[in-house]
Amino acid sequence: MQKIAGRREDAIGLDIGSGSVKMAEVVLRDGKPYLKRMALTEVPDRSVVDGAIEDEDQLADTLQKMAARNGFAGARVAAALGGRNLFIREVNFPRMTEKEMREAIRWDLEKYVPFSPDNLYFDFWIVGSGATEVEVRVLLVAVPKEVVDSVVRLVKKAGLKLVAIDIEPLAIQRTLPPVSDCMLIDSGAAVSQVTLFQKFSPVFTRNIPIGGNQFTATVMEGLEIGRDEAELIKHQGTDLLENSAAGDVADAMQGQLDRVVGELAGEVRRTIEYYQVQNRNVGISRVFITGGGAKIGQLPEKLSAILELPVTLHDPLLNMEIAPSFNRQYLRGVGPQMAVAVGLALRGSER
Image (tube, rainbow, N blue to C red; front, side, top):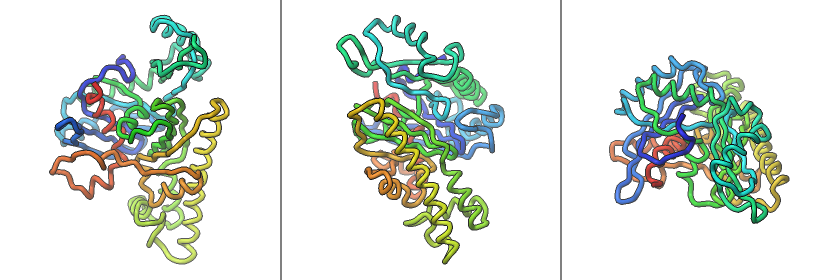
């Protein structure tokens, strides 16, 4: 199995989500990232659930056709792991050799991850000094073996070559502004993955079962409309339901959507408080929100008002050079969804 977030080499970024699959190719031009190609397509229904691949054959067929249409057939790709099966923790360990630490972590894994060590792939990085001179801070990442193995099988079935496996928070971090202590909310179709960063390292991650699908379902039910129309209403304008309905219906729908926003904000606040109880003097200076579920009109502003923190909608394409063949209006619409794929494609530039 490829080492998680291991060696840096050029590869196409591949993001497999519950709602869509994304691919991106980024090259360096005069030392600056340049988006050369990208692709996005919806995944077959229920082929990916909570970040886990449920129907490999159907998804592999979709991925293979997508790659062929967009010039990625047979490409070398870097994939990312995330969702409920990704565990990230920062822990303190005594100073020791890398070999000794790997063995020590293997024995201690069950303290941090609710799975048997025999069923996990794990990796770690030393990110700084610990609480005492004889300790170091270690970033521990663990994923169930079946989750990783299913990605390996999928990529092979699709005729692509997997050269690296990363984790979603690290991939997105490559696209973020250089903010030391911040929070990232990656809002997908079914789940929002929340990651806390301290001194530029991810130290804690949690998955909240609120995503774009919940907002869409609320609009569909309240207005008795189809999914496509609900998606359009959800993303448009200066408010969650601008120009979508009138009078009492609009007011009722606004209230229901605000309730979902409130639930998301409440879970985000509890995540911060939980980590701060265990790690005093930890601060969050800024919140970034990205992903397909982040494109709801005024969502960053509403979260900012509730959390009392600056919240920014993160589009990884805004500060990149873009190939002239791209439709700029299309890119503005899909930008937040491309953060993981673009971040994976940027791995080679870190060498």
